[in-house]
Image (cartoon, rainbow, N blue to C red; front, side, top):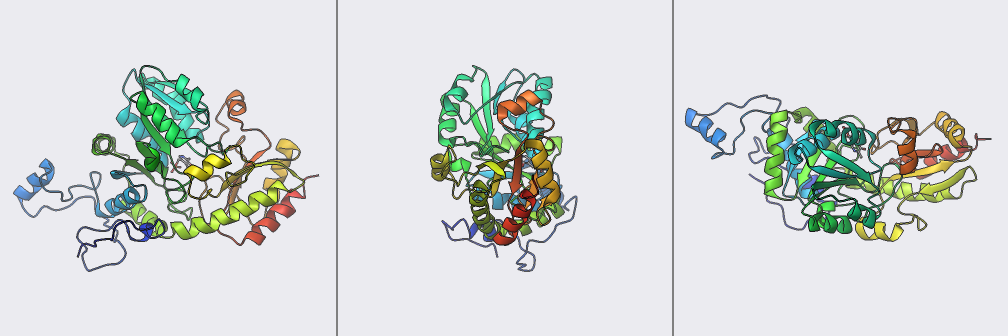
Amino acid sequence: MKKKLPPNLDKATKPIHAGHLTHPVYGEVSVPIFQTSTFAFPSADEGAARFSGADPGYIYTRLGNPTVHALEENLAELENGYGALATATGMAAITTLFLSLLNQHDHLLAGDCLYGPTEVVIEAELPRFGIATTLVDTSDLSALASALRPNTRMIYLETPANPTMKITDLKGAAAIAHQHGALLAVDNTFCSPYVQRPLELGADLVVHSLTKYLSGHSDVLGGMIIANNAMLFRRIKKTLTLFGATMDPHQAWLILRGVRTLPLRLAKAQENALKLAEFLANHPKVTWVRHPGLPHHPQHALAKKQMDGFGAMLCFGVAKGREGARILLNQVRLITLAVSLGGVESLIEHPASMTHASLSPQRREQAGIRDELVRLSVGCEDFSDLRADLDQALNKIP
Ligand SMILES: *Cc1c(COP(=O)(O)O)cnc(C)c1O
């Protein structure tokens, strides 16, 4: 009964079909929730065989669960990786990645414009374990290359960067990492595999917050690590199952449900995002707009080359600086004032006082997170409703 999928499926087909049960119970079309902590062995010998690895059967849900496994197979397929490991949250994926692959005295070279909590882990937590860290503008490949140290073990970055939408050349960054014997790891949350597949461009590892586009309905947390080879996969799996930041089967089921509509949701959201970016670029209360799909984005050509579409995130500067941003956020009626991103509903937030408030003012300045910057996660609503809402709110700025 195991489903054999045809090869070379399109990126719109894979999310619907990839990831299935090795042993369906009743021919079920939806993967069931295996809400069990442990699995009975048919015999003592079989139990021993599962522990030795001779038999791949399930043992205990922290070590593996069929519902979670179906989601892992789905994501491994979407990112074109060797294997994927599901985690409790996106932050659990990121910290498990670091704790699996970095040792005392290693150096981690990371982008200077990252998800806020990731940056705090890199700057304040990893050094406690004797891991040296440096932040650098990875969109500048020569700056990246000259920040390498003899003990640099990993380069870690986000592209487009959050929230500034700066883009890093993934092929170039992979070449720099590999020449040095280091790994390239990419947080692909902002794009999802529908828009960008870093492993195909040379990265060794991808992490996701599944809380965002992949689940897509702002109702569940989750994370995933995708490795491009067996050695990395096994190393990370060992740390993950020992340290215990694994995913619950009910969570996996909700996320699998969301993944199936990823192509439909993102196609609509990124169409809306490009149209809104164009609208905002011509609005008198908007001072500048950053979206990779706009021809005036400094790295528009690179975005076109390495992304498959431009995603549905954008940021812009509001007239009257922080006060203008405050008015806009208080006046929107359809768009929701909330952090997070990637859901079917559009969300608006102010990074300098919210998602990136934990950074020092100098670090924000260095990363280009100015007080007038507003971040928008564009959802799947009708475009003219979104445009009208932004227009009325922006026009309240004196
Ligand atoms: C949300 C987010 C994370 C963290 O994910 P959680 O699921 O909230 O732990 C990491 N990276 C990026 C880019 C994110 O947007």
